[in-house]
Length: 217
Image (cartoon, rainbow, N blue to C red; front, top):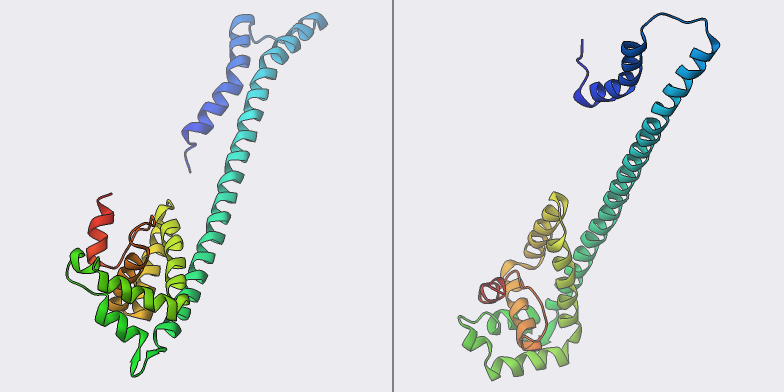
């Protein structure tokens, strides 16, 4: 047989304590006096009315809290589903963009790999790369715009609390690396940093050069 838990015992104790106290003080003998019954009813009513009111308030607050939690979970699910959809959309658009011909004999992916994987921040901040980034942006502006749109999605997932946010964030990073290649994601991080000259408040997740800098902020 299952034993009653502590909250149940406390609840029953609160309900039975007034009756037990009354019986201990005035005895257990049933009276045939109408006045005594009226006094008993008045005493019990005066004791139980605030107890019932408090218990009712507790139940209502519990229901409100549970409803709030359910609404928050539903809102989180909607947000996470939208984030997954956005990542899939942007990664597909980016894959199409970087595989397009940017100059004779070279795709944008090839140009990004050749120029935007430097070994130091000094090389990354060079005037040559700034000019290259500007030329790419002028020629194919949607490339910068698509990759820039991914950062707010990742930042929102990273800022969210709970295992679902952590799992969705991790899977989004893996999905981008799988669909575009890790090397391309590194180059796109560096390209974005060079093009905006580090003026945007963005947290980079792929470029080893940039993750060291922005993780220390």
